Every structure is written in structure tokens, then in C-alpha cells.
Image 1 (cartoon, rainbow over the protein chains, first blue to last red):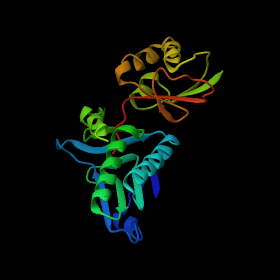
Image 2 (tube, rainbow over the protein chains, first blue to last red):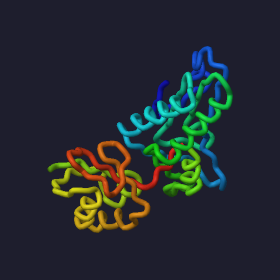
Image 3 (cartoon, chains in turn blue, brown):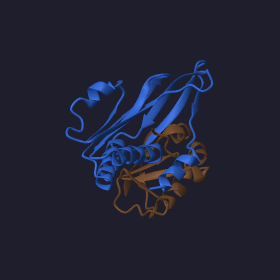
Amino acid sequence: MTARVQTAPFDLAAEMAGFGLRAGALVTFTGVVRDDTGLMAALEIEHYPGMTERALQDYGMQAAARFDLTDWRIIHRHGRIPVGDPIMMVATAARHRHAAFQGADYLMDWLKSRAPFWKREIATDGTATWVTAKSSDEDALNRW
Amino acid sequence: MTLEVLYFAWLRERVGQPRETVTTDAATVRDLIAELRAQSEGHAAAFADMASLRCAVDQQLADLESPIGSAREIAFFPPMTGG
């Protein structure tokens, strides 16, 4: 039941060692920097130190209460992250798969629109563009 | 009262600084914005699009009508793009 914000990469296998012991279902999601245009070098992620850690902890605890999760983990990176690198992960553990899937889905929807991170795309020519929030992400949050 | 005001992402770029200490009697976040907007062209540009403005009062998400009360830290930023 931990949330971390860090610049360093993370190792999914290492994170899952000992995670969710005795659970019947484990779900993990990893977000990776993608390049849809062939022109992107990296993402640069800014966050709100202090508030971010608190928000991730709150959302993790809300998901645990709502879906009866026996364990959860959130890791979100900030700083410059090259294309192909993992940005963030969530892991959930529950007795059954529905709760584990739903818990992970719920956490992702909250992280997308309510965790204080801001992404900027850095192109191969060095230009930087702030990513704008998608209304579909806001709609996704309303499902819950 | 004295408040720390923080800016993130393109609001920070438009204001030209990540944080400032302000002395104000503003009752709500919206009142505070009206005062900040008058400070410089950069501030005015940062607060030009209110639909794209989000805020936190003492590190909790809040809306523009939120009372400032005894808050110490108010942050302004665009819609979040995590995940």
C-alpha cells in the first residue's frame, strides 16, 4: 500500500516481488512514453511536490476501500523520460480478478485527471509542447 | 495575511516564476486571482483562460469560489495530465 514519485526508472519485476501476498488476483498496468509521430524524443513531467504524494496516497486508499484491495502500489516518474521508457505503474491485489481490474482502472482514471502532473512533449528538434488534457479522460472519471 | 502562491506548467512560464509571496485580504480564490491579474502582463496572460485554470488550496484541489480562510499555500495550474 505505497505510492512513490521518483525520477529514476523502476523495475516492474522487482516491484512485484512480495506484492499482494495471498491475494487471488494481481493486476499491473505500466504506462510507456509513446511516439505517434516519429518526431518525439521524450516527455518531460512536472509535478507538485508534497501535493502529489498526498494525492496518490489518498487515491490508493480510496481504491482499496472501494474495491476491497488487499494491496496496491502506485509509482509515477517525473523529469525527462525518453520514448520507450516506462512513465508510471499501478498494481492492485484482490481476492478476485474483477476487483483487481476495476481497482487498477479506477486508479488510472484518477491519476490521469486528478494527480498534479503536467506533461510536455520534447521533439527531436528540441521544441517543447505542453500536452493538453483530454475531455475523454474527464468523462472516464465520471464513470465512477 | 501572507500567502505563498505557486504556479505550475504553462502558468509558471507565463507568470515567469514558480512561486511568490503575496499579502492579500482576498476572501476567495477568485478574489485573489483578480488581484494577481493586475500585477503584470505575465500574470494577466496566465489567468486569461479561466476555463483552463485549476487550483489547490493547501495542497487540496479546490474550486475558484473556495474561501481562502487561513490557508498558507494556493497553487494555480492547467488541467492535469498524469498517467
